[in-house]
Length: 354
Image (tube, rainbow, N blue to C red; front, side):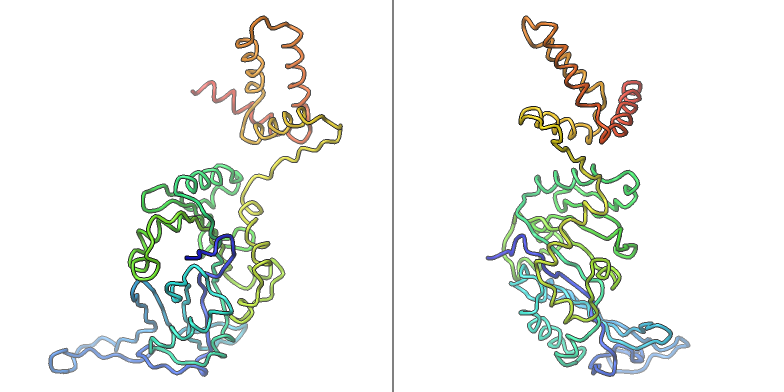
């Protein structure tokens, strides 16, 4: 089976179609009166007749939802029917994601529910919102957990409030940044979770019916485009489902893959070889920059000198002094001076408390 790894694809979205283009074949929005099942007698009472505005069902692990809503369009409003669309409607081809080639199969599945009826063109011209773009990679649960831990530990201090949850369980390994409802273009809702574990636990019925594989080593990232302004932030003009499906995978990959780093993580210190360092010196300087980023202070680097003295026989003072001077000179860089001072202050407090 092809799992379409390292290809951005649409996992789910919401489509809204103006009500005058839809034939309602269900009880959505209609008065429902309680009656006895045995003889059909209407049950009396003072309660107002029940009006259900939506239908949500799950069939063989595939969920679908239809609803009648009122959409605000500027100063006016419009009645629309809403359909929640997801890639599980593709059945065994779930890992393809929804695209312009298989969207007709998704449409056929929706119409086959016998709840709403509308033309294929009106479906493609429907307004699209709340779109989840996913990206799958090969990774076992342990590797995925380590990835999530690294991302969590690298989140900017001022962005830590957006860490919604971090889970490491037998049934779920993942990390969520922000929430779907609170997301903004510069603080988007992003999920990292292990798709193999999710299929074996939360989507067991769907997996048993269509995928029929257990223990898949697949990790997934999902990026949510909540509203149009989320697309506009990246220069994408998306209003309809037709527009959404026309975005090339190359564009999606360029937009989605670096969003965690762009909006949530500490920026890497760039080590430049302006002084024409040799390969060994540049390598050492690069490792120093990495240690500074990870919170190491001056004491950490000086311990290196002490370890060298302790574990080297007949070491000469000049050799120790040369190492110390090299480290001191390497640390005297404006690019990490502020971070190094902060790390050293933390080291001092850490020594007091631990």
